Length: 351
Image (tube, rainbow, N blue to C red; front, side, top):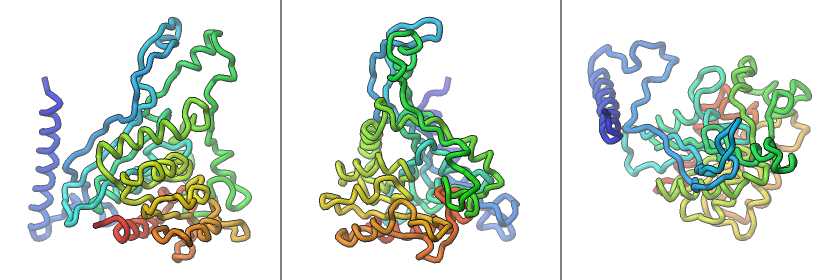
């Protein structure tokens, strides 16, 4: 029988062996560290550790468990949040902070992993750049815990149907209307790989964030638990993710090295006189139709940020980066956007 301790040790041996192999290849004339693949493919990702865990859950007795035919009381880890991590083998001096990637509404950690057309996502890019990287599924979503209690109560006639959790569905009609230009998540006419739209739509999931059972509070609780476990970190949130991360920055600025808000909900509303001195980057892409306002109230954010010297507000076209959709972590120039974010982090969050 393999114990968890032995499994983890074995994993380290495998990763270390891979690193030794790469070192030998690098020192051998004519050897290829990318195992002979085309130059357009990235080399192997070498890690010191990888895995997953859960944070923030509370053991809770629900009245409608088991099922579907039989219901009885039972205990679940309510509001537990799934976390997947990758720790690079290479060490930097000074050490680079942890990066947490928090997806937007209807999305899970896959938003930052392989793009719909098969390229590397921001998770791999951060790891290659030397950052220990943690990708989460927000509470009540994806691989995170979900309480079936209220649904089962309605099914059993013990509760009013109005108590069923409210669901947001990011279907094709919401996310990817082909017209007008700049509608939905701005996928058509942008840098998004629209020919792989079906791959993208396959990863979006039902979202219970706007129900009374979920919302910012359990997500804030889980994020604090994660930050207390791994230490102060850079948190990058996308879209709806900002509704959970902004309150956490305000409540516990001691746990943040920096905050990157990529087209986040509530950006300007969160920036009040009491907003902490946490280095903060507010970033939006291209509205495509330039007669439209900049996405997510960016012009208002620029005005508000003038009283916060540790805050940066960027509209990507001002940086010469054009055509980015709301899903810029998946866009064909996602590496270009990643590089400007990484450079900002290295200016603002490193010792």
